[in-house]
Image (cartoon, rainbow, N blue to C red; front, top):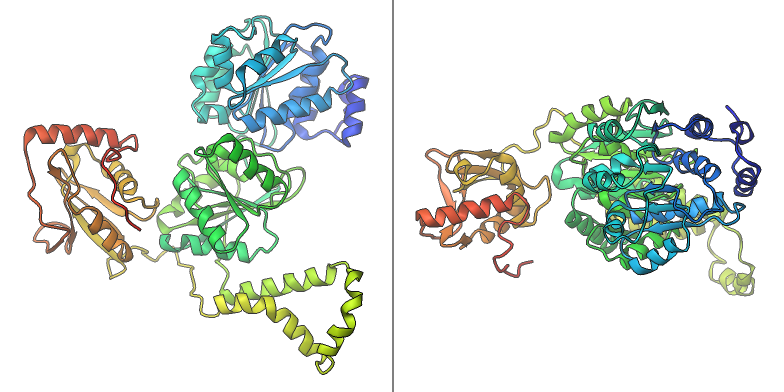
Length: 576
């Protein structure tokens, strides 16, 4: 592999590289920098998050622009505010010896007027999020009609976040003869479409294989019943005392709920999702970077742009809806030459997804067991012993040794050690001594109707606009349940069935008592034998109005539920 000196970089950039302590270029830097320096070409670079992509396009752009001109010559689009600021700061460090360099970050959540002033002072390079950039173009606050280089960083992330139209709109304001450099971890069809429509005969470099996970990350999965998912998460955390992790959930509600439960149970945790204000988000990320938060619970969108090199574990509390997203999640660990672990907690119905992910990332998962209570106690005890052994002595306590020695004068060394470690060990032992085995086998049916789950009849079906998936989403939404709390959903023409665990029976029946929309009751009853000749435990006496106008209004509401808003206009009862 080349050194940075071999890549053709100017002395002022090499001086900055030396200051930063970089020794050898990463693989993507080694492949991309010579091409971008020597040629005026479009480029598609496929490489995982954390492989040094910013330097791969940053150094060539800094070397090629004219710092003596105030014209905007380079545009870098990135998916999130955090990544936008990170790229901007890194470019300033790379170009610290480029006199006259002005790199400006444009992103939402800050004063658009101040950002416009910064650009007007003469920004050779603009780093922007697509939404804010499009807004500033429409207000004629920026001029990108003369740029020579455009970069789409984390292109797949931007498209996953719905920025396709923004990106195409922004690029339509740029010269056709510019060079476009696209950097992405994966190559879905949307990214390929961008490359086809906005690039001319791009050269392509790939670090590893397309969508492949980095070799620095090992992949594990743990099979549990859906109801035991949170307990499994706690055990995985307790079995790794020095864990510094990102925990991924699918929804904002689940993210907040899991974080709150972890905090209540004594873990140093925090939530990161789209409902937080920018100030709240900044505080959470500051605490995480300072290791004040060990377990950051996040949605996929909110986690984009997290750039912390020493994350030890990624835990998939729930698998993503899009399998390709797993590549981005696991890429949060195993960065900067360090190793990492990506863990997945799955229920039986999700095991098939593991095989799909294996095909995409070209890596095998190792099936592991959730540790037993006693295994966790042993790990915690040894961890505490190591911490005590490696602790530097604080000699300020010397003045108190006399009193302490008097207290323990009749205590043997072994007895003293036992007493000392029992202070911490007893807490775990008392909690875990009667802990159940959470592991299940693939052959087990975790949702057999054998007293552990309840099957319900509901008087809506396909004629109301529901299939099994939209009905499941509706039930999760109105009942405020998790992804795996509703299962065995079966949609018929005019009625349907679904299951929950038995402990949710009271909540389900209670919620659907007198639940109606525009005069039409939605009835839920317990079904003993899946429909015909069923015995039902009714959730309440109701008169079911089949008025055609009511049905039409109900149909509209059902269609609205597909966007996740069914029933939100109805005043909610306060319930715990």
